[in-house]
Length: 81
Image (cartoon, rainbow, N blue to C red; front, top):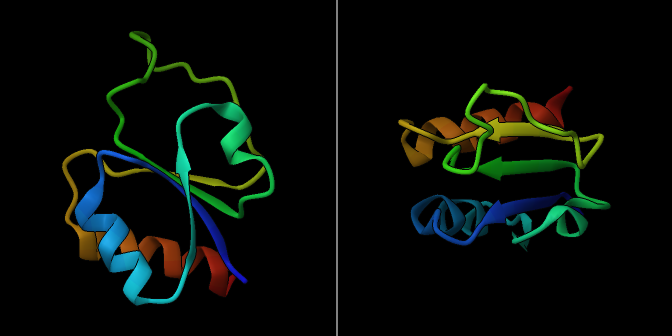
């Protein structure tokens, strides 16, 4: 199953991904990202300088300023590679 970690505050994106059949994990800390193929973040917790420490080998998608459809399409693209 395609496993996606997603921040809790992204409820509209969470609903859209659930409808597409993705296995979702609530992303609250770096351990939640382990074993996930893709992570969707709100971008609110980014370092001031834009530097992030990698907590996963999967793709990280920043949902800031994007629609649920845009983010879902990018998640779909992650699994079609």
